[in-house]
Amino acid sequence: MEDTICAISTALGVGAISIIRLSGNESINIVNKIFKGKDLTKVDTHTINYGHIYYENELIDEVLVSIMRAPRTYTTEDIVEINCHGGIATTEKILEILLTNGARLAEPGEFTKRAFLNGRIDLIEAEAVSDLLNATSQKVRNTAVNTLNGRLTNIIKDLRSKILSVMANIEVNIDYPEYEDAIEITHNNLLPMLEDIKNDFTKILEDANNCKYIKNGIDIALIGKPNVGKSSLLNALINEDKAIVTSISGTTRDIIEGKMDLNGISLNIIDTAGIRETDDVVEKIGVLKSKNIINKADLNILVLNNNEELTKEDLEILDNIKNMKYIIYVNKSDLDKKINIDNLDSSKIVYGNTIDNGGLKDLKEKIIELFNLGSLESKDLTYLSNARQIATFKKALESLDSAIKNTKKMTPIEMIDVDIKQVWDLLGELIGQTYHDELLDELFSKFCLGK
Image (tube, rainbow, N blue to C red; front, side, top):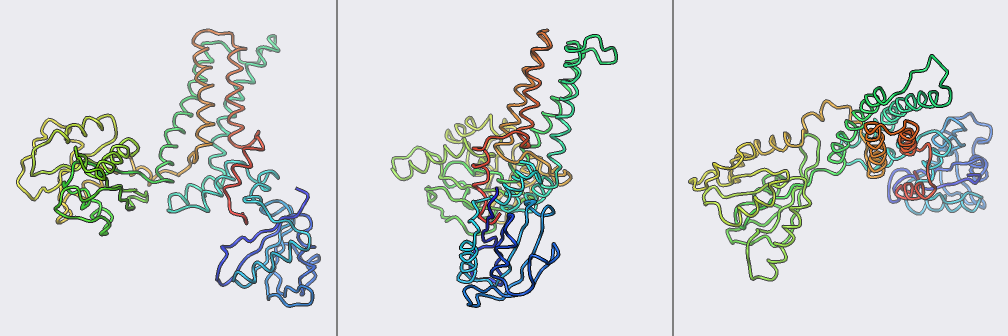
């Protein structure tokens, strides 16, 4: 990290301003070569300086230059930010001049990578930067901000502190058995210590499921046989004429998607082709897609017709989703009731119709109840937020479970200590106390160039 990097930090295109950022020991000197105004090497840190960019006696642009000296910067290195007029030609010209004068084009995420490697942020906080940049809702933004402020890191550090205490007592028992002030670690008192730590693990993993819904939304499939009103229900939920609605059976032959917001969570509504036996080649493909969607969805809403008796297709779909999260929406409640569903779970049934949007409020409340969305309003939104974090945390939990199992089997404590140390190491890997270069390359490659 001896070289000086630079990149455009704003979206490239027509706009009021663009920002080109540099980080490294030579940042100030490089910009000072092409800047006419104050001597940037002598100005105070964290100041904005007016002047012009010149190259080979040609005026390039009128600019404001921010000078931020190490270590009180994003990367803990000297940072310079050039605010120039927006526009592709001007922005790229200044970038080109900086590269000509000794800077190197930054790799994706390299500014944040330097912040991590220089100890300003940990790995979880670095990932939160990416989440903040890509936030599509207020809850995603709040979660990212909380993580960036160190809340999740503090939770992991508290866990490591508990584990370290257990490890330290074990080590003292093994290495200094004559030391009377140390707690004697036996299988009987080790087990409740480990189980207490596991309770913390379980709570964190449960909350991680909430984060999945906050970040990615909830995938909801509208399923059922043809002509029961799935497309009409999609249109009613998203308040848009997204799907074609006709009285012709089998109108929907492919997947149609729409989005809505519920309690700050994005619902990805998927209207599927009606499921039935058919000889139509195209419709068969649609039915197959529908069956695949059922298995992938977070929630299936089975739409039934209040004006018809249950059919073989209805019963087969019910059997397929019985072990999944599902709601039964009995549509066309404005028509005479012919359906007999008295033997089904009434807690999963909502009656309504898509003529006057009857039952939509009840349907939304049922979704809120199923996914516990109401409780998210009162939570501090501090969660494991991506696959890497969850996978590493689960590995740590596996080692903890192994330690608990071996404690119950009365395995020698020095052998149990190996599993406990593995838990400690994996939690350290989670926050970046230890890491592999390949992991960093993959993680930061997902960032934009100027971050």
